[in-house]
Length: 506
Image (cartoon, rainbow, N blue to C red; front, side):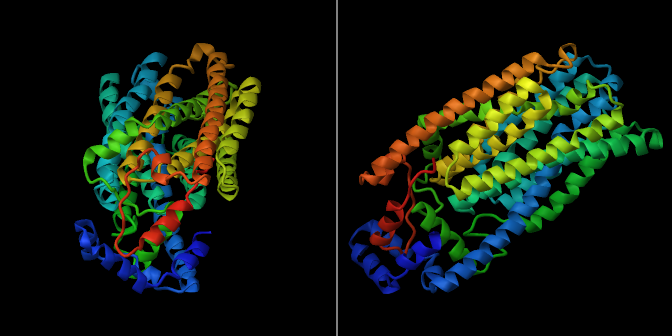
């Protein structure tokens, strides 16, 4: 669709573009734009066939370097974050002489640091280079993971878990923000789902690796198996982070491994999709934050993110749930892998369909209906609700497009509020409530129902906004005053043609 639109827009000659810029030269704004380089001139001068071919090449490079590298990083991120749950199964809680409640506090305190840093970090990331910032954070949290292996008291664990959360906070929201800077709205859902499949794979790998470490390394060099798990996980994280320095991209306009033609096409694709360039129109730091706070839709999505995370919260405690079935430790860990992998497949397929049909609400509702059924029947079925989580995040990315700072802050804010689910759920899976965990299942089912209702409300709101756009209402007013930066070299007609084609994904 975007390439077909490009064929129409690029029929406007470059000479007309220059002429239009010259006509605007009487104003200071026009002279400023005239002096700026036209970063998409190379893309504008291409034939539709050349543009389509290079666009495909740019997308393939982004898939390999951004999605591929980020996926590996995210698997390790989730492994480092949640290996404490697997470590509990093989003796960590007993080694540190902690009660079930104290261990729950250790899990929950991670999210205090994790949530407090997400919004400030993404605000900074919108102005920094992701290829440097994200791997640097990864190296430090990998080192902290190694240090976990040498703890001997619950107080030490509490302190370390807080700072681990503080340092891991930039990662998930940062990746989601960077991904949204590279793909069109018809491509975002699948990429976000692929990225968010990493936690499920990380959870599956955690069980398999923990079983292998427990059977093969218990007592090696006088070190307990759970301590070896933190050592090996942290060392792997540091190694991957070093590689990421050279592989991860920054933004389409300044990624070092793209040619000038590829950078122009990467930006042009986004302009055709959203009608504006991926920059802040208002350079003040406060605009993106204020527009996020005062946009009530952001808060609806944030509540939706919290509820959908609660609906799928069994994910973080699945080893403990399976343990109640009476299997040995090794078998318990191995049995956790299957449902996680099924959830990965469901999430990817669900998001692919969401992109294909340009619809988010329906593909949030059906997995949660299945999750409610699973909560009623058995705890193990509720992992399918995770596929709705990926679509909620993609819906946020597709709705709050520009300015860049607002998108960054909104993604972080929604994810931050969703993080409260981890604190809440850490107290829902106490040993005395096993094996049915009736309270946890009730909370999960109620949260799924709440998410469904909010998805219906947001669908109605965005459909109403699209009707206004169809009636000729100005895009800027429907998008709640979002500030847009204009790129040099585009005529007013080209800008208007792209903007008038914008419609919300419902």
